[in-house]
Length: 264
Image 1 (cartoon, rainbow, N blue to C red):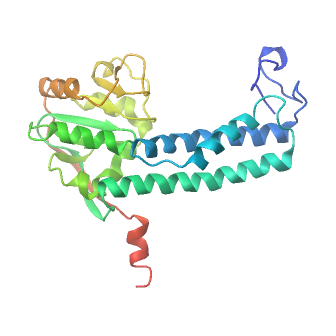
Image 2 (spheres, rainbow, N blue to C red):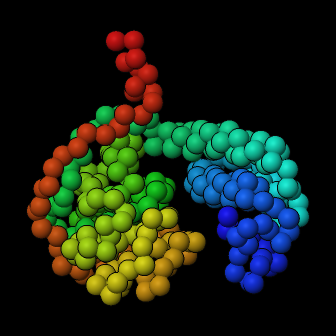
Image 3 (cartoon, rainbow, N blue to C red):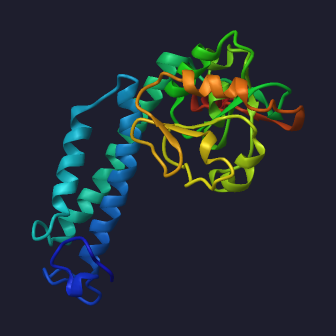
């Protein structure tokens, strides 16, 4: 057991055998699971809200779940376990909201072959999860001779009809988010981090890393809104990328695609 959830924690560091408040390791464990679950829910509820999708029951549950972990509120394992299970149910609802927001705005994902690597010319790299940010960037870079690339968990963007219709959505660059510190220095253009999964940048690319709204890192430049003119200007000034095709991948197997062939 290790619990440092309140100011009463033993020696100001953490309770390890039993809580000063009286909680045991099982209660602490359920509260910890609930906190992690609610953080994940809030992340995707935030994405859904930006797409106009909300559910009052989800918002109410997040408040109730957080309150249940406050010191001296709940020591009952049965009710805490039910709260953890309800977190799972509410999380499914959040993912439904996000799916609705994505498909209504960008269309239903479809199987798509994606170019991985770079193409000759100026480029901007987008990492994170926020498809709305990517859409706004694609609109603002249209006709400017700048290619836009996805990175990491942005890969599914290429399967949405309203995003892939942009010819300058040129491809996908790099591997998973944890490879940023050695992949990003090799990308010569500016980089936009839209949500979580962005790492604190070394000096090799900190001056080219932009974030927006709540996402921020030391050394990077945080934009307060979706005016990407600063990034576009830098893309035109940076050394152009070179042709470097790594491979092609096929993506876009949305659940509707899979269910469409389930009986075949």
